[in-house]
Amino acid sequence: MMSYSLRKPKRVLSVIALSLGLSLATLPNAYAAFPFLPADNTQQQPSLAPMLETVLPSVVSIKVEGTTQMKNNMPEEFRRFFGYPDNQSRQFSGLGSGVIIDAEKGYIVTNNHVIDNADKITVELNDGREYQAKLIGKDPQSDIALLKIDDAKKLTAIKLADSDKIRVGDYVVAIGNPFGIGQTVTSGIISALARSGLSMNGFENFIQTDASINQGNSGGALVNLNGELVGINTAIIAPSGGNVGIGFAIPSNMVNNLTSQIIEYGEVKRGVLGIKGNELTSDIAKAFDLEVQKGAFVSEVMDDSAAKDAGIKSGDVIISMDGKPVDSFAELRAKIATTGAGRTVKLGLIRDGKEISVEVKLKNGNESNTEAKSLHPALDGAILINGDVKGQKGVLIDSIAKNSPAARLSLQEGDLITGVNKTRINNISDLRKIIDSNPSAIALNIIRGDSRLYLILR
Image (cartoon, rainbow, N blue to C red):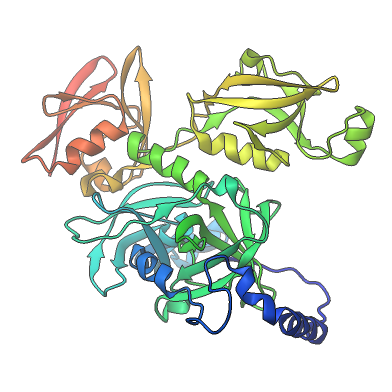
């Protein structure tokens, strides 16, 4: 679980007193606040249990083990004199949560920071069964990772809600494995939407909630009262290291976009609009005589970009995407980046005081890659991207770590894998499907410069 500290004066006693007063004042109307509860307290006691009985089996606990490299900051001349290594390895273990999104194929979504650098990933189901999981793909910039467990029977997948339809004030329930104590349920409301500016150096478009989220909840579910997934719990603000009622979740629509791309292509195909801009402030709105106060202000349109092709101009204010409001530039950036290259979106604009709409076919940001060890242990150390060399599509070896299994296999940077055995492949997804079918032999058909060769995976 990521946490962020904010140092501000706190008035704990006054807050507690206010909360208590509000609770006592509104107690008689508590039943009316929940539409699914009985109208009066003479009937069966209100409970979330019926909903949770269907949802809890879809949330899993995750244990990871791995090795990370610790950089030695000692000056090089001293390292050589005393014989210290440049870097040292350190073993680590960690805990987190995940959510089953496809019961038939065993797909589980979690946070990238939960499984980052893990050599071993163990998934524990709600009923206590344990399985070793394989990393299918990840997107560090949005903090999403997709895992897969094989040969697991009677799994329960969660239903996904349309996160664009949730509202501030909606009741939600957080489910996860805080501090490794076991599956735990907490409740709260949606506190804010499209939250950004947390300095996570990625795409930020978070749901904020006051449902209690702690370390170990990362990757767990945030669900509505229908038991549908509205977000993946990701981060908290924790001045003292514990929960203070400010938690953040990645919206389910963003999660669905990213995992769908990983499943289809083996990677995230980053969508790019091709603009520069910033938030629409009151000063900008006044300078351009705009009546709107929220949106993404376009300061520059890049040449040869999707925005340029669609006719977007500097000075435009983007206020909606596919009919859903856009409140900030950060929200637009996150939605565009996770929608996927090649897809067409409809943007609502304000130009010269008039509202217009344009359709934009997003271009490929070409930033994504896949760790090859998620496909086969013999490929560990190689980074793969979908490539096209002289009109020949395939899987390109983007980089190779020295002395890695992939290097010992004689793979080289710039190699283009165009087939497996006698089957042609065009992308990482094709390669993954063939390897996942467990063929008796795996022979990679490779183009290296002007030569063709086969390398056998063992």
